Image 1: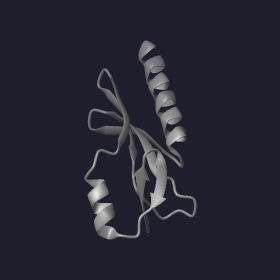
Image 2: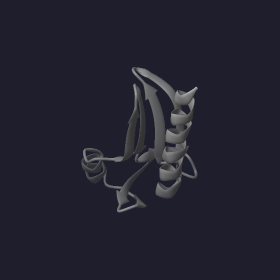
Image 3: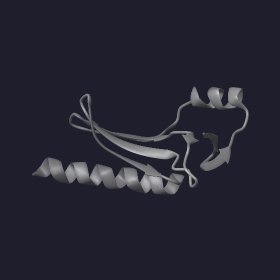
Image 4: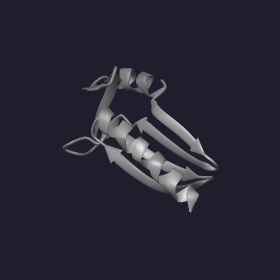
Length: 95
């Protein structure tokens, strides 16, 4: 399992466990959007087992249910994915 931290919008490997745990206590949300009862949340996860780490995750919650989740490699992909999820929820709420 590899650990990572964010420096600005850049992902950096983190070998020091205490530094990584300290980082996890900080605000890791990139964006949060609430539409009715639905919450779209994009966060930096900071840990990965993958060869190409997918360290950002957008999750759509409706109350206590997780409706969908998508992982991203970069900050920019995560922001774009968040915006796409918001658009999808807005469009579905018009139906």
